[in-house]
Length: 620
Image (tube, rainbow, N blue to C red; front, side, top):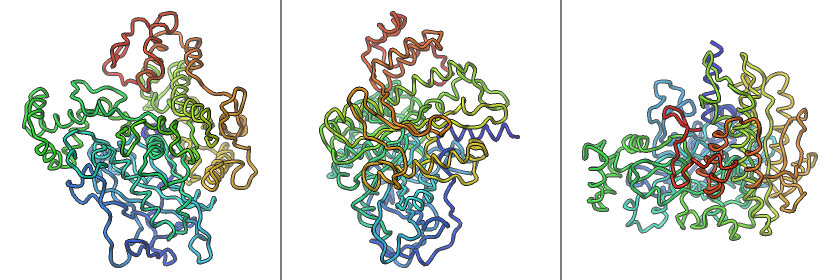
Protein backbone atom coordinates (compact mmCIF):
# COMPACT_ATOMS: atom_id res chain seq x y z
CA UNK A 1 0.00 0.00 0.00
CA UNK A 2 1.10 3.61 -0.48
CA UNK A 3 1.60 4.33 3.20
CA UNK A 4 3.86 1.31 3.57
CA UNK A 5 5.97 2.51 0.68
CA UNK A 6 6.27 5.97 2.20
CA UNK A 7 7.14 4.46 5.56
CA UNK A 8 9.94 2.52 3.85
CA UNK A 9 11.20 5.69 2.22
CA UNK A 10 11.22 7.51 5.55
CA UNK A 11 13.17 4.63 7.07
CA UNK A 12 15.73 5.10 4.34
CA UNK A 13 15.78 8.79 5.12
CA UNK A 14 16.48 7.94 8.74
CA UNK A 15 19.58 6.12 7.54
CA UNK A 16 20.53 9.25 5.64
CA UNK A 17 20.50 7.75 2.19
CA UNK A 18 17.26 8.52 0.42
CA UNK A 19 18.86 11.70 -0.74
CA UNK A 20 22.03 10.04 -1.97
CA UNK A 21 20.95 9.83 -5.61
CA UNK A 22 20.23 6.70 -7.59
CA UNK A 23 22.66 3.82 -7.35
CA UNK A 24 25.16 3.81 -10.25
CA UNK A 25 24.55 1.38 -13.09
CA UNK A 26 26.54 -1.84 -12.76
CA UNK A 27 25.04 -3.97 -15.53
CA UNK A 28 27.24 -2.49 -18.24
CA UNK A 29 29.76 -4.32 -20.37
CA UNK A 30 33.41 -3.30 -20.74
CA UNK A 31 34.28 -0.41 -23.03
CA UNK A 32 37.62 -0.72 -24.85
CA UNK A 33 38.12 3.03 -24.59
CA UNK A 34 38.47 2.63 -20.81
CA UNK A 35 41.33 0.11 -21.00
CA UNK A 36 44.17 1.59 -18.93
CA UNK A 37 47.42 0.36 -17.48
CA UNK A 38 47.78 1.74 -13.97
CA UNK A 39 50.41 1.09 -11.31
CA UNK A 40 49.46 -2.49 -10.42
CA UNK A 41 48.16 -3.73 -13.77
CA UNK A 42 45.62 -3.22 -16.55
CA UNK A 43 42.03 -2.26 -15.83
CA UNK A 44 38.94 -1.78 -17.97
CA UNK A 45 35.71 0.03 -17.09
CA UNK A 46 32.43 0.90 -18.75
CA UNK A 47 30.46 3.78 -20.26
CA UNK A 48 27.26 4.77 -18.42
CA UNK A 49 26.21 7.28 -21.09
CA UNK A 50 27.36 10.32 -19.14
CA UNK A 51 30.84 9.31 -18.06
CA UNK A 52 33.31 6.46 -17.99
CA UNK A 53 33.32 4.52 -14.74
CA UNK A 54 35.64 2.01 -13.10
CA UNK A 55 34.13 0.25 -10.11
CA UNK A 56 35.61 -1.91 -7.37
CA UNK A 57 39.33 -1.17 -7.70
CA UNK A 58 41.12 -2.35 -4.57
CA UNK A 59 43.44 0.22 -2.99
CA UNK A 60 44.36 -1.65 0.21
CA UNK A 61 44.23 -5.24 1.40
CA UNK A 62 43.20 -6.88 4.68
CA UNK A 63 43.61 -10.54 3.70
CA UNK A 64 43.19 -11.98 7.20
CA UNK A 65 42.78 -11.06 10.87
CA UNK A 66 46.51 -10.49 11.34
CA UNK A 67 45.96 -7.22 9.41
CA UNK A 68 42.98 -6.25 11.59
CA UNK A 69 43.54 -2.95 13.44
CA UNK A 70 46.56 -2.09 11.35
CA UNK A 71 47.20 -0.03 8.28
CA UNK A 72 46.09 -2.15 5.35
CA UNK A 73 48.75 -3.79 3.21
CA UNK A 74 49.46 -2.68 -0.33
CA UNK A 75 47.59 -4.49 -3.08
CA UNK A 76 49.59 -6.88 -5.24
CA UNK A 77 50.15 -6.58 -8.96
CA UNK A 78 47.79 -8.61 -11.12
CA UNK A 79 48.10 -10.29 -14.48
CA UNK A 80 45.70 -9.80 -17.35
CA UNK A 81 42.98 -7.16 -17.40
CA UNK A 82 40.91 -6.47 -14.29
CA UNK A 83 37.28 -5.81 -15.22
CA UNK A 84 36.19 -2.94 -12.98
CA UNK A 85 32.49 -3.35 -13.73
CA UNK A 86 30.94 -3.91 -10.30
CA UNK A 87 31.45 -2.61 -6.79
CA UNK A 88 33.75 -4.30 -4.30
CA UNK A 89 32.68 -5.74 -0.97
CA UNK A 90 30.86 -3.58 1.55
CA UNK A 91 32.77 -3.03 4.79
CA UNK A 92 31.48 -5.08 7.74
CA UNK A 93 28.35 -3.51 9.24
CA UNK A 94 24.82 -4.32 10.35
CA UNK A 95 22.55 -5.09 7.41
CA UNK A 96 19.91 -2.46 6.65
CA UNK A 97 18.06 -0.73 3.84
CA UNK A 98 21.22 1.12 2.89
CA UNK A 99 23.53 -1.81 2.32
CA UNK A 100 21.51 -4.84 1.30
CA UNK A 101 18.43 -5.43 -0.81
CA UNK A 102 17.77 -8.75 0.93
CA UNK A 103 15.25 -8.16 3.71
CA UNK A 104 16.30 -11.41 5.40
CA UNK A 105 19.72 -9.86 6.06
CA UNK A 106 18.42 -6.74 7.80
CA UNK A 107 19.85 -6.66 11.30
CA UNK A 108 22.47 -9.28 10.50
CA UNK A 109 26.15 -8.52 10.01
CA UNK A 110 26.96 -8.10 6.33
CA UNK A 111 30.08 -7.23 4.37
CA UNK A 112 33.74 -8.03 4.88
CA UNK A 113 36.79 -6.67 6.63
CA UNK A 114 38.62 -6.88 3.29
CA UNK A 115 36.61 -4.05 1.77
CA UNK A 116 38.98 -1.28 0.70
CA UNK A 117 37.72 -0.54 -2.79
CA UNK A 118 37.28 2.70 -4.70
CA UNK A 119 35.43 3.83 -7.81
CA UNK A 120 36.32 6.40 -10.48
CA UNK A 121 34.09 8.49 -12.76
CA UNK A 122 35.70 10.44 -15.62
CA UNK A 123 34.17 12.74 -18.27
CA UNK A 124 33.94 11.08 -21.67
CA UNK A 125 36.49 13.43 -23.24
CA UNK A 126 39.07 13.19 -20.45
CA UNK A 127 41.03 10.23 -21.81
CA UNK A 128 42.12 11.62 -25.18
CA UNK A 129 45.86 12.00 -25.88
CA UNK A 130 45.52 15.78 -26.11
CA UNK A 131 43.30 16.13 -23.05
CA UNK A 132 44.57 18.30 -20.22
CA UNK A 133 44.58 16.97 -16.68
CA UNK A 134 41.49 17.96 -14.72
CA UNK A 135 40.67 18.39 -11.00
CA UNK A 136 39.87 15.37 -8.86
CA UNK A 137 37.16 15.21 -6.19
CA UNK A 138 37.35 12.35 -3.66
CA UNK A 139 34.02 11.56 -1.96
CA UNK A 140 33.93 10.13 1.59
CA UNK A 141 30.49 8.72 2.43
CA UNK A 142 28.56 9.23 5.67
CA UNK A 143 26.82 6.78 7.97
CA UNK A 144 28.03 7.62 11.52
CA UNK A 145 31.24 5.70 10.75
CA UNK A 146 29.28 2.53 11.44
CA UNK A 147 27.41 2.01 8.15
CA UNK A 148 27.23 2.99 4.51
CA UNK A 149 29.44 2.51 1.47
CA UNK A 150 30.42 4.20 -1.76
CA UNK A 151 27.85 2.23 -3.79
CA UNK A 152 24.94 4.56 -3.03
CA UNK A 153 26.24 7.59 -4.89
CA UNK A 154 26.17 8.28 -8.61
CA UNK A 155 28.37 11.31 -9.35
CA UNK A 156 28.37 10.80 -13.13
CA UNK A 157 26.40 14.03 -13.69
CA UNK A 158 28.79 16.01 -11.50
CA UNK A 159 31.78 14.56 -13.38
CA UNK A 160 30.35 15.06 -16.87
CA UNK A 161 28.70 18.46 -16.48
CA UNK A 162 31.50 20.09 -14.50
CA UNK A 163 34.50 18.39 -16.14
CA UNK A 164 35.93 16.89 -12.97
CA UNK A 165 36.95 13.38 -11.97
CA UNK A 166 35.10 11.93 -8.98
CA UNK A 167 36.47 9.11 -6.82
CA UNK A 168 34.39 7.44 -4.10
CA UNK A 169 35.86 5.15 -1.46
CA UNK A 170 34.99 2.52 1.11
CA UNK A 171 36.71 2.60 4.49
CA UNK A 172 36.55 0.37 7.56
CA UNK A 173 33.61 1.00 9.88
CA UNK A 174 32.51 0.35 13.45
CA UNK A 175 34.93 -1.60 15.68
CA UNK A 176 37.22 -2.31 12.72
CA UNK A 177 37.53 1.37 11.83
CA UNK A 178 37.89 2.94 15.29
CA UNK A 179 39.25 0.83 18.16
CA UNK A 180 41.70 1.79 20.91
CA UNK A 181 42.64 -0.94 23.34
CA UNK A 182 45.99 -0.30 25.05
CA UNK A 183 47.07 -3.94 24.64
CA UNK A 184 46.27 -4.30 20.95
CA UNK A 185 49.16 -3.25 18.70
CA UNK A 186 51.10 -1.91 21.70
CA UNK A 187 54.21 -3.76 20.48
CA UNK A 188 53.79 -2.75 16.85
CA UNK A 189 56.81 -1.10 15.27
CA UNK A 190 54.45 0.99 13.14
CA UNK A 191 53.17 3.79 15.35
CA UNK A 192 50.18 4.30 13.02
CA UNK A 193 48.91 0.86 14.04
CA UNK A 194 48.51 2.08 17.63
CA UNK A 195 46.38 5.09 16.71
CA UNK A 196 42.96 3.46 16.77
CA UNK A 197 42.06 5.48 13.64
CA UNK A 198 41.98 2.67 11.10
CA UNK A 199 39.13 4.15 9.07
CA UNK A 200 41.14 7.37 8.74
CA UNK A 201 44.25 5.40 7.77
CA UNK A 202 42.12 3.94 4.99
CA UNK A 203 41.17 7.39 3.69
CA UNK A 204 44.85 8.36 3.68
CA UNK A 205 45.76 5.18 1.82
CA UNK A 206 43.04 5.90 -0.75
CA UNK A 207 44.49 9.38 -1.28
CA UNK A 208 47.93 7.82 -1.74
CA UNK A 209 46.42 5.60 -4.44
CA UNK A 210 44.95 8.69 -6.09
CA UNK A 211 48.33 10.39 -6.11
CA UNK A 212 49.96 7.39 -7.79
CA UNK A 213 47.22 6.52 -10.28
CA UNK A 214 44.74 9.27 -11.05
CA UNK A 215 46.71 10.76 -13.94
CA UNK A 216 46.09 7.54 -15.88
CA UNK A 217 42.39 8.45 -15.70
CA UNK A 218 42.98 12.02 -16.85
CA UNK A 219 43.17 13.56 -13.39
CA UNK A 220 45.50 16.19 -11.97
CA UNK A 221 47.22 14.75 -8.91
CA UNK A 222 48.27 18.27 -7.88
CA UNK A 223 44.64 19.38 -7.63
CA UNK A 224 42.68 17.02 -5.38
CA UNK A 225 39.61 18.07 -3.37
CA UNK A 226 38.26 15.86 -0.59
CA UNK A 227 34.56 16.16 0.20
CA UNK A 228 32.19 14.24 2.43
CA UNK A 229 28.91 14.43 4.30
CA UNK A 230 28.03 13.76 7.96
CA UNK A 231 30.59 11.22 9.24
CA UNK A 232 32.30 11.66 5.88
CA UNK A 233 32.53 15.36 6.71
CA UNK A 234 34.09 14.52 10.06
CA UNK A 235 36.63 12.36 8.25
CA UNK A 236 37.41 15.20 5.85
CA UNK A 237 38.04 17.40 8.89
CA UNK A 238 40.25 14.70 10.41
CA UNK A 239 42.35 14.61 7.23
CA UNK A 240 42.87 18.35 7.59
CA UNK A 241 44.69 17.68 10.87
CA UNK A 242 46.51 14.50 9.79
CA UNK A 243 50.19 15.10 9.12
CA UNK A 244 50.47 11.91 7.05
CA UNK A 245 47.80 13.28 4.71
CA UNK A 246 49.51 16.60 4.11
CA UNK A 247 50.10 17.16 0.41
CA UNK A 248 47.74 14.36 -0.64
CA UNK A 249 44.87 16.83 -1.16
CA UNK A 250 44.60 20.56 -1.78
CA UNK A 251 41.02 21.61 -0.93
CA UNK A 252 38.43 20.32 1.53
CA UNK A 253 34.61 20.38 1.67
CA UNK A 254 32.82 19.44 4.91
CA UNK A 255 29.07 18.87 4.47
CA UNK A 256 27.07 18.58 7.72
CA UNK A 257 30.10 17.33 9.60
CA UNK A 258 31.91 18.60 12.67
CA UNK A 259 35.29 19.01 14.31
CA UNK A 260 35.00 17.36 17.74
CA UNK A 261 37.32 14.33 18.05
CA UNK A 262 36.79 11.09 19.94
CA UNK A 263 37.69 10.48 23.57
CA UNK A 264 40.77 8.29 24.04
CA UNK A 265 40.36 7.99 27.81
CA UNK A 266 36.77 6.84 27.42
CA UNK A 267 37.69 4.24 24.82
CA UNK A 268 40.46 2.75 26.97
CA UNK A 269 38.52 2.67 30.26
CA UNK A 270 36.42 0.09 32.05
CA UNK A 271 32.89 1.53 32.11
CA UNK A 272 29.93 -0.20 33.67
CA UNK A 273 27.63 2.02 31.60
CA UNK A 274 28.84 3.45 28.32
CA UNK A 275 28.27 7.19 27.86
CA UNK A 276 26.23 8.71 25.05
CA UNK A 277 27.95 10.94 22.48
CA UNK A 278 31.27 9.14 23.01
CA UNK A 279 33.06 6.25 21.32
CA UNK A 280 32.34 2.90 22.92
CA UNK A 281 34.85 1.40 25.38
CA UNK A 282 37.22 -1.12 23.79
CA UNK A 283 37.86 -2.73 27.19
CA UNK A 284 34.14 -3.37 27.54
CA UNK A 285 34.02 -4.81 24.03
CA UNK A 286 36.69 -7.30 25.10
CA UNK A 287 34.74 -8.02 28.29
CA UNK A 288 31.70 -8.88 26.17
CA UNK A 289 33.79 -11.05 23.85
CA UNK A 290 35.14 -12.95 26.87
CA UNK A 291 31.56 -13.55 28.04
CA UNK A 292 30.38 -14.56 24.56
CA UNK A 293 33.17 -17.13 24.32
CA UNK A 294 32.19 -18.66 27.67
CA UNK A 295 35.40 -17.59 29.40
CA UNK A 296 33.45 -15.65 32.06
CA UNK A 297 29.85 -15.55 33.21
CA UNK A 298 29.39 -11.82 33.78
CA UNK A 299 31.06 -8.45 33.37
CA UNK A 300 32.72 -8.46 36.79
CA UNK A 301 34.46 -11.79 36.25
CA UNK A 302 35.33 -10.82 32.67
CA UNK A 303 36.96 -7.64 33.95
CA UNK A 304 39.01 -9.59 36.49
CA UNK A 305 40.12 -12.04 33.78
CA UNK A 306 41.02 -9.24 31.36
CA UNK A 307 43.17 -7.55 34.01
CA UNK A 308 45.03 -10.82 34.56
CA UNK A 309 45.63 -11.53 30.87
CA UNK A 310 48.94 -10.69 29.20
CA UNK A 311 49.24 -8.28 26.33
CA UNK A 312 50.04 -11.17 24.01
CA UNK A 313 46.99 -13.11 25.22
CA UNK A 314 44.64 -10.15 24.75
CA UNK A 315 45.88 -9.42 21.25
CA UNK A 316 45.65 -13.08 20.28
CA UNK A 317 42.08 -13.31 21.57
CA UNK A 318 41.05 -10.22 19.62
CA UNK A 319 42.68 -11.35 16.38
CA UNK A 320 41.45 -14.93 16.58
CA UNK A 321 37.85 -13.80 16.99
CA UNK A 322 35.73 -13.87 13.85
CA UNK A 323 34.33 -10.75 12.21
CA UNK A 324 30.88 -11.71 13.50
CA UNK A 325 32.09 -12.26 17.07
CA UNK A 326 33.82 -8.87 17.20
CA UNK A 327 30.86 -7.03 15.73
CA UNK A 328 28.27 -8.68 17.95
CA UNK A 329 30.31 -7.84 21.05
CA UNK A 330 30.58 -4.26 19.81
CA UNK A 331 26.81 -3.97 19.34
CA UNK A 332 26.23 -5.22 22.90
CA UNK A 333 28.42 -2.53 24.49
CA UNK A 334 27.31 0.47 22.44
CA UNK A 335 25.05 2.87 24.32
CA UNK A 336 23.37 3.89 21.08
CA UNK A 337 24.37 2.17 17.87
CA UNK A 338 23.36 5.30 15.93
CA UNK A 339 25.91 7.52 17.67
CA UNK A 340 28.83 8.44 15.45
CA UNK A 341 32.34 7.08 16.03
CA UNK A 342 34.83 9.93 16.05
CA UNK A 343 38.55 9.93 15.15
CA UNK A 344 40.94 9.92 18.10
CA UNK A 345 43.45 12.77 18.65
CA UNK A 346 46.26 10.23 18.96
CA UNK A 347 49.12 12.55 17.95
CA UNK A 348 50.10 10.45 14.96
CA UNK A 349 47.18 10.03 12.57
CA UNK A 350 45.17 12.88 14.11
CA UNK A 351 46.84 15.84 15.79
CA UNK A 352 46.91 15.71 19.58
CA UNK A 353 45.55 19.28 19.44
CA UNK A 354 42.36 17.94 17.93
CA UNK A 355 40.91 19.04 14.60
CA UNK A 356 40.11 22.67 15.38
CA UNK A 357 43.18 23.11 17.56
CA UNK A 358 45.37 21.85 14.75
CA UNK A 359 43.82 24.24 12.24
CA UNK A 360 44.05 27.15 14.69
CA UNK A 361 47.77 26.41 15.05
CA UNK A 362 48.19 27.11 11.34
CA UNK A 363 48.43 23.53 10.07
CA UNK A 364 47.22 23.23 6.46
CA UNK A 365 46.47 26.96 6.39
CA UNK A 366 47.02 26.90 2.63
CA UNK A 367 44.13 24.46 2.12
CA UNK A 368 40.86 26.28 1.33
CA UNK A 369 37.89 24.93 3.28
CA UNK A 370 34.20 24.90 2.34
CA UNK A 371 31.94 24.04 5.26
CA UNK A 372 28.20 24.04 5.79
CA UNK A 373 25.04 22.50 7.23
CA UNK A 374 21.37 22.14 6.30
CA UNK A 375 18.74 24.36 7.88
CA UNK A 376 16.72 21.44 9.29
CA UNK A 377 19.44 18.86 10.01
CA UNK A 378 17.78 17.49 13.12
CA UNK A 379 14.36 16.72 11.62
CA UNK A 380 15.79 13.47 10.31
CA UNK A 381 16.79 12.39 13.81
CA UNK A 382 13.64 13.66 15.52
CA UNK A 383 11.26 11.65 13.34
CA UNK A 384 11.15 8.73 15.76
CA UNK A 385 10.75 10.81 18.92
CA UNK A 386 7.30 9.83 20.25
CA UNK A 387 6.90 13.13 22.09
CA UNK A 388 7.16 15.01 18.80
CA UNK A 389 5.62 12.64 16.27
CA UNK A 390 3.02 9.91 16.20
CA UNK A 391 2.50 7.20 13.63
CA UNK A 392 -0.76 6.92 11.70
CA UNK A 393 -1.12 4.34 8.92
CA UNK A 394 2.61 3.68 9.33
CA UNK A 395 3.47 7.29 8.50
CA UNK A 396 5.02 9.77 10.99
CA UNK A 397 2.74 12.72 11.79
CA UNK A 398 3.75 15.89 13.64
CA UNK A 399 2.01 16.31 17.02
CA UNK A 400 2.60 20.05 17.47
CA UNK A 401 3.99 21.92 14.46
CA UNK A 402 5.29 24.90 16.47
CA UNK A 403 7.09 22.65 18.94
CA UNK A 404 8.42 20.44 16.12
CA UNK A 405 9.95 23.40 14.29
CA UNK A 406 11.24 25.01 17.49
CA UNK A 407 13.05 21.92 18.79
CA UNK A 408 14.52 21.29 15.35
CA UNK A 409 15.66 24.87 14.97
CA UNK A 410 17.49 25.06 18.31
CA UNK A 411 19.09 21.64 17.97
CA UNK A 412 20.12 22.39 14.38
CA UNK A 413 21.42 25.83 15.33
CA UNK A 414 23.65 24.23 17.96
CA UNK A 415 25.00 21.89 15.28
CA UNK A 416 25.62 24.82 12.91
CA UNK A 417 27.36 26.85 15.59
CA UNK A 418 29.66 24.00 16.59
CA UNK A 419 30.37 22.75 13.07
CA UNK A 420 30.44 25.96 11.04
CA UNK A 421 30.06 29.37 12.66
CA UNK A 422 32.39 28.98 15.62
CA UNK A 423 35.25 27.32 13.66
CA UNK A 424 34.85 29.76 10.74
CA UNK A 425 34.85 32.81 13.02
CA UNK A 426 37.84 31.50 14.96
CA UNK A 427 39.93 30.63 11.90
CA UNK A 428 39.20 33.85 10.01
CA UNK A 429 39.91 35.98 13.06
CA UNK A 430 43.37 34.41 13.11
CA UNK A 431 43.94 35.66 9.57
CA UNK A 432 42.69 32.92 7.25
CA UNK A 433 40.82 34.23 4.23
CA UNK A 434 40.02 30.91 2.52
CA UNK A 435 37.01 29.71 4.56
CA UNK A 436 33.71 29.49 2.64
CA UNK A 437 30.48 28.62 4.47
CA UNK A 438 26.96 27.72 3.35
CA UNK A 439 23.53 26.75 4.61
CA UNK A 440 21.22 24.56 2.52
CA UNK A 441 17.60 25.75 2.92
CA UNK A 442 15.68 23.98 0.13
CA UNK A 443 12.39 22.63 1.52
CA UNK A 444 9.94 22.51 -1.37
CA UNK A 445 8.80 18.92 -0.91
CA UNK A 446 5.21 18.20 -1.96
CA UNK A 447 2.33 16.93 0.12
CA UNK A 448 2.05 13.13 -0.11
CA UNK A 449 -0.68 10.89 1.28
CA UNK A 450 -1.87 13.52 3.73
CA UNK A 451 1.63 14.39 4.94
CA UNK A 452 3.17 17.82 4.39
CA UNK A 453 6.75 16.74 3.72
CA UNK A 454 7.86 20.37 3.66
CA UNK A 455 7.15 20.57 7.38
CA UNK A 456 8.02 16.98 8.28
CA UNK A 457 11.40 16.90 6.54
CA UNK A 458 12.29 20.37 5.23
CA UNK A 459 15.98 20.91 4.52
CA UNK A 460 16.92 17.81 6.47
CA UNK A 461 20.20 16.02 7.02
CA UNK A 462 21.76 14.66 3.79
CA UNK A 463 19.20 16.34 1.51
CA UNK A 464 21.90 18.42 -0.17
CA UNK A 465 23.71 15.35 -1.52
CA UNK A 466 21.66 14.82 -4.71
CA UNK A 467 21.94 18.54 -5.45
CA UNK A 468 25.72 18.23 -5.27
CA UNK A 469 25.85 14.97 -7.24
CA UNK A 470 23.29 16.23 -9.77
CA UNK A 471 21.54 12.93 -10.36
CA UNK A 472 17.74 13.01 -10.28
CA UNK A 473 16.97 9.87 -12.23
CA UNK A 474 13.72 8.05 -11.50
CA UNK A 475 14.13 6.68 -7.99
CA UNK A 476 12.65 6.97 -4.52
CA UNK A 477 13.68 10.61 -4.27
CA UNK A 478 11.85 11.77 -7.38
CA UNK A 479 8.77 9.71 -6.51
CA UNK A 480 8.31 10.96 -2.96
CA UNK A 481 10.23 14.20 -2.52
CA UNK A 482 10.09 15.87 -5.93
CA UNK A 483 7.10 16.80 -8.05
CA UNK A 484 6.29 18.27 -11.44
CA UNK A 485 5.93 21.65 -9.72
CA UNK A 486 9.37 21.74 -8.13
CA UNK A 487 11.60 19.70 -10.46
CA UNK A 488 12.70 22.69 -12.58
CA UNK A 489 13.66 24.70 -9.50
CA UNK A 490 15.46 21.67 -8.09
CA UNK A 491 17.55 21.16 -11.22
CA UNK A 492 18.38 24.86 -11.40
CA UNK A 493 19.59 24.85 -7.80
CA UNK A 494 21.48 21.60 -8.35
CA UNK A 495 23.32 22.97 -11.39
CA UNK A 496 24.30 26.03 -9.37
CA UNK A 497 25.61 23.96 -6.47
CA UNK A 498 27.55 21.62 -8.75
CA UNK A 499 29.04 24.68 -10.43
CA UNK A 500 30.15 26.18 -7.11
CA UNK A 501 31.58 22.86 -5.88
CA UNK A 502 33.48 22.38 -9.14
CA UNK A 503 34.83 25.93 -9.23
CA UNK A 504 36.08 25.42 -5.68
CA UNK A 505 37.80 22.23 -6.88
CA UNK A 506 39.38 24.11 -9.76
CA UNK A 507 40.53 27.26 -8.00
CA UNK A 508 39.97 27.01 -4.24
CA UNK A 509 37.33 29.77 -4.45
CA UNK A 510 33.69 28.99 -5.38
CA UNK A 511 33.42 32.59 -6.62
CA UNK A 512 30.54 32.84 -9.15
CA UNK A 513 30.67 29.22 -10.25
CA UNK A 514 32.34 27.70 -13.31
CA UNK A 515 30.65 30.05 -15.79
CA UNK A 516 30.88 33.14 -13.62
CA UNK A 517 27.13 33.72 -13.80
CA UNK A 518 26.06 33.02 -10.21
CA UNK A 519 25.86 35.02 -6.99
CA UNK A 520 29.34 35.85 -5.71
CA UNK A 521 30.13 33.42 -2.89
CA UNK A 522 32.36 35.47 -0.61
CA UNK A 523 34.66 34.03 2.01
CA UNK A 524 33.70 34.30 5.68
CA UNK A 525 34.44 37.80 6.96
CA UNK A 526 34.86 37.89 10.77
CA UNK A 527 34.05 41.60 11.05
CA UNK A 528 30.67 42.77 12.30
CA UNK A 529 28.06 43.54 9.63
CA UNK A 530 30.05 41.66 6.97
CA UNK A 531 29.00 38.71 4.84
CA UNK A 532 29.49 35.32 6.43
CA UNK A 533 27.90 32.52 4.42
CA UNK A 534 25.79 31.76 1.37
CA UNK A 535 22.25 30.35 1.49
CA UNK A 536 21.09 27.80 -1.10
CA UNK A 537 17.36 27.94 -1.76
CA UNK A 538 14.83 27.98 -4.59
CA UNK A 539 14.01 31.33 -6.18
CA UNK A 540 10.50 31.29 -4.72
CA UNK A 541 12.06 31.31 -1.23
CA UNK A 542 14.71 33.95 -1.83
CA UNK A 543 17.17 32.11 -4.05
CA UNK A 544 20.93 31.97 -3.60
CA UNK A 545 22.15 34.83 -1.43
CA UNK A 546 24.85 35.90 1.00
CA UNK A 547 23.99 36.81 4.60
CA UNK A 548 25.65 38.65 7.46
CA UNK A 549 23.84 36.56 10.04
CA UNK A 550 25.81 34.11 12.17
CA UNK A 551 25.49 32.29 15.47
CA UNK A 552 27.32 32.77 18.74
CA UNK A 553 26.93 30.93 22.01
CA UNK A 554 25.20 33.95 23.51
CA UNK A 555 22.73 34.15 20.61
CA UNK A 556 21.92 30.45 20.89
CA UNK A 557 21.11 30.66 24.58
CA UNK A 558 19.09 33.87 24.23
CA UNK A 559 17.04 32.50 21.32
CA UNK A 560 16.27 29.36 23.28
CA UNK A 561 15.36 31.23 26.46
CA UNK A 562 12.96 33.59 24.68
CA UNK A 563 11.30 31.13 22.27
CA UNK A 564 7.60 31.28 23.15
CA UNK A 565 6.79 28.29 20.94
CA UNK A 566 8.22 26.02 23.63
CA UNK A 567 5.74 26.14 26.53
CA UNK A 568 7.35 23.53 28.80
CA UNK A 569 10.63 24.82 30.24
CA UNK A 570 11.88 21.23 30.58
CA UNK A 571 12.15 21.05 26.79
CA UNK A 572 14.46 24.05 26.87
CA UNK A 573 16.56 22.49 29.60
CA UNK A 574 16.86 19.27 27.62
CA UNK A 575 17.91 21.11 24.45
CA UNK A 576 20.61 23.00 26.31
CA UNK A 577 21.64 19.88 28.20
CA UNK A 578 22.00 17.89 24.96
CA UNK A 579 24.17 20.61 23.44
CA UNK A 580 26.46 20.58 26.48
CA UNK A 581 26.72 16.80 26.49
CA UNK A 582 27.34 16.64 22.76
CA UNK A 583 30.10 19.19 22.36
CA UNK A 584 30.77 21.09 25.57
CA UNK A 585 28.86 24.01 24.08
CA UNK A 586 29.02 26.00 27.28
CA UNK A 587 29.95 25.63 30.93
CA UNK A 588 27.93 23.37 33.17
CA UNK A 589 26.85 26.18 35.48
CA UNK A 590 24.74 27.60 32.65
CA UNK A 591 22.28 24.80 33.39
CA UNK A 592 21.53 26.21 36.81
CA UNK A 593 21.56 29.85 35.63
CA UNK A 594 19.54 29.30 32.46
CA UNK A 595 15.95 30.54 32.21
CA UNK A 596 15.74 32.01 35.73
CA UNK A 597 17.08 28.91 37.47
CA UNK A 598 14.37 26.70 35.97
CA UNK A 599 17.00 24.08 35.09
CA UNK A 600 18.52 24.04 38.57
CA UNK A 601 17.28 20.52 39.26
CA UNK A 602 19.72 19.17 36.66
CA UNK A 603 22.81 17.83 38.40
CA UNK A 604 25.83 19.27 36.55
CA UNK A 605 28.12 16.59 38.04
CA UNK A 606 26.17 13.76 36.39
CA UNK A 607 27.62 13.04 32.95
CA UNK A 608 24.76 10.89 31.71
CA UNK A 609 21.47 12.53 32.64
CA UNK A 610 18.22 10.64 32.23
CA UNK A 611 15.88 13.32 33.55
CA UNK A 612 12.42 13.38 31.99
CA UNK A 613 13.12 10.38 29.76
CA UNK A 614 11.19 7.15 29.73
CA UNK A 615 13.62 4.25 29.35
CA UNK A 616 11.70 3.06 26.29
CA UNK A 617 12.08 6.39 24.52
CA UNK A 618 14.99 7.11 22.25
CA UNK A 619 17.02 10.10 23.32
CA UNK A 620 16.64 12.62 20.54
